[in-house]
Image (tube, rainbow, N blue to C red; front, side, top):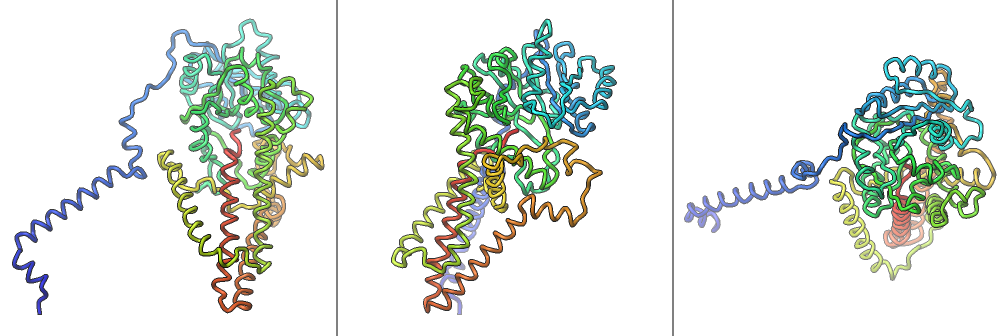
Length: 515
């Protein structure tokens, strides 16, 4: 028996056809509009219609520039790549020089530079004759050697200085893309390019690209005039560098310190969001951990700036700002460790962490809070053109041992006086992970990863939390007839507290480093 709807359709077949065509056209229009307006997928398609003036220098009346290449025991082939990339920069050879500043005092590097001078006569080699183990203020001291000892003795010092780490390759248009920012605005004291890397592992599991910093925090800091530059891929006026006393040696993060003292001289830092240099990241977990240890010790050294013996080199207006910045980096691993440490005991205690009568209120509020957090993260991702996903700052949350290792390093260095955080430069060939002749056995490498790199602690933490969850659920089942209700009052607040602490600690740390 035919239904009434079928009989109606048969009686009005013409109108049904028109309705079908209408809804088909409507469907195509909606799908097409979604395809065109979907920001997540077509952001860059619309970016081509935004025309911006590209600042590049012309050949007439170009200022003189010295490119400083500090190195300290890195593999020769890596240094050679950087030297060659610097020598072929698109700039008149008579207007710029490349100064190789070798703290490793390598005879092989000296000889190879002399050979390259036949092709590039503007390439020069200098060395302080020091060894990496001596107290010579590391890279900052090496750069000051080039700034004062070498350039100070020249009849015509350069107008600008640029600097690159020995494992970063400058783009051919580096000087033409950065100098116009300095020439066009007297208030700009330093211009730095973002750091991109060519040896990142697939998926970047350790977050070594620092994409969150470059895509989210740096544009915001640029707009506020509080950008932080790195001493690799930066250009600044030489007279300004001399005026501020050179590269700061009060701590081991001379790039951040220099960025913080320039505003006291009426200058600001500009970070250029263009791919103007390509560098290397540590190729092993051990190298990554050691690099982070050096960064965290240098950053927390800022806490002592107001009463440090060499504080006279830092403007008064910058001292307390630097101290607060260092406290922030001390608080970050401390809060993360405390948050992680209370999870397992809270679960094992088998105590209801939320009174039952408040559960009906807390669950809706928690859902609202999570919804707002997701909205905030989506807006942050949209601001980057969805080059980053939501919650991108959780890139190292899976490695809970990172916070523990940073806190342990700070205790060793600042309280026990250990030199755990003062390792050689990350790219030095003397490090085991950079020396092919020191490849450890699988057993020895596993031991290093478990003990020295903190993987063992991370495994124990995960198993401890899983055991706590199992113990809490089992106890609720055994002791309470309404065990599902008790489990929610015990587990849900614990997990939410951990997530909230992770969000808070991640938001309070705008970068791991920009070295």
